[in-house]
Image (cartoon, rainbow, N blue to C red; front, top):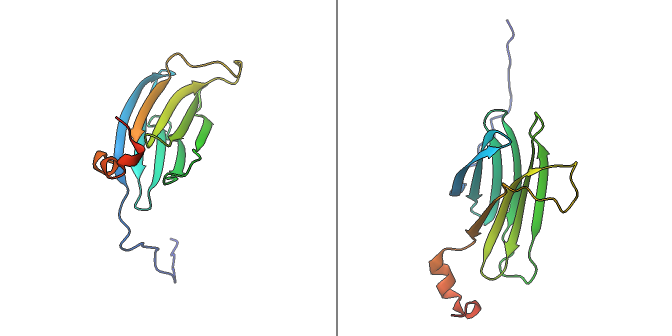
Length: 143
């Protein structure tokens, strides 16, 4: 029998709120698998975009910090091999006006030309702010 002793206390982060689940969806038929898309907002306005394959426990994720109205937008993309011939592309584009993220989930194919697009690509538009917050900064909106 092995005995393990530790002299340090486990790291516990006190008073840090859990991330808010903003959006969740199931992506059927991506390379004959079912994937999940999760979007979470942290207390510091960082957004996590995660695609997960429950069958293989493969994950691809992107974290984006809100630019808070700066004039430059972010575009981030990750391509990951989920095994058994499935490449998954996750791309997140930050829009300035209206404040939102455009999220794309598609099969990646390194054998195709760079301009190739997955015909089954899933595209989501996710607001960066609540509607009530948009009314407060109505100088950026025109009707």
